[in-house]
Amino acid sequence: MSEWVAGFHAVRAALDSGTASEVCLLSERRDARSRELETRCRNLGIALRRVSKQELEALNLGVHQGVAARLAAGREVGDEGALESLLDELSEPALLLILEGLTDPRNLGACMRSAEAAGAHAVVVPRSRTAPLTPAARKVASGAAERLPLIVVANLARTLRWLEQRGIQRVGLAGEGEAMLWSLDLRGGCALLLGAEDTGLRRLTLDHCDEVARLPMSGEAESLNVSVAAGIALFEAVRQRQPG
Image 1 (cartoon, helix red, strand yellow):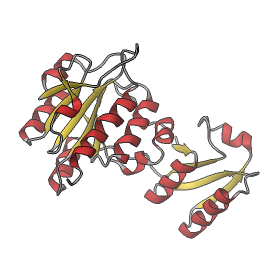
Image 2 (cartoon, rainbow, N blue to C red):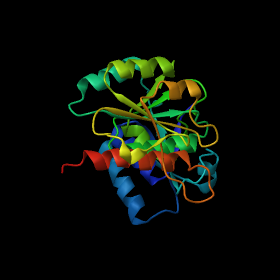
Image 3 (cartoon, rainbow, N blue to C red):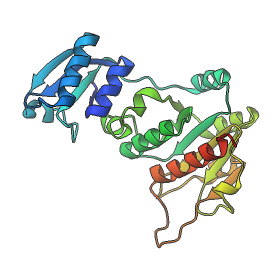
Image 4 (cartoon, helix red, strand yellow):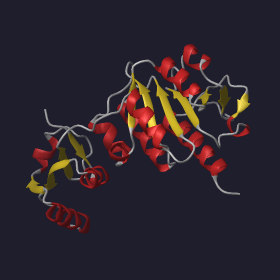
């Protein structure tokens, strides 16, 4: 079964990454963005078809903005070996985002978007109880799913022990954390761990963290959406890593 992405950001990312095999554009769209897309496809030698609204909606891609791209192959996800190779090649302290228990593809996509914007090197998720990288996730990621490595590991606890051996600090975010996140030193190799807002991180996962930190919550809400919390945590690490 073919995999599709929809929306201008996701389609441009598919063209940039070379994974688009065909683009479908709504017949009525004749605006500047559509003309630019037509030119890109022509220059890249990618087939572009003008289609009806009914044809686009039959793909069941949600809000499509009048454009969709068929992927030549599903984006390959990495495994433990890919993570090891990635870390071996880094010339700067690693910044990883580790997510546990995310079952909503849109949350996965939003977290990948935040991670790429912050310059994280990869997003790591366990194989079980994790949403797949669906077209909905790709759309929310706005192209990050095509550029940022997604690493799927068989055993998260084992991966966390291995990261410890690599000298990477493991920082879990949880409401019960004693330290405020910004009181920690995040300038070295660091993995930030977050769980879904309804379940949080498992106790076993927390036990494998070097630090458990929290964000201040002033209102009545007990937790933030995981993608919001991930963005805050990632950019705190970015802030600390800035020169001076």
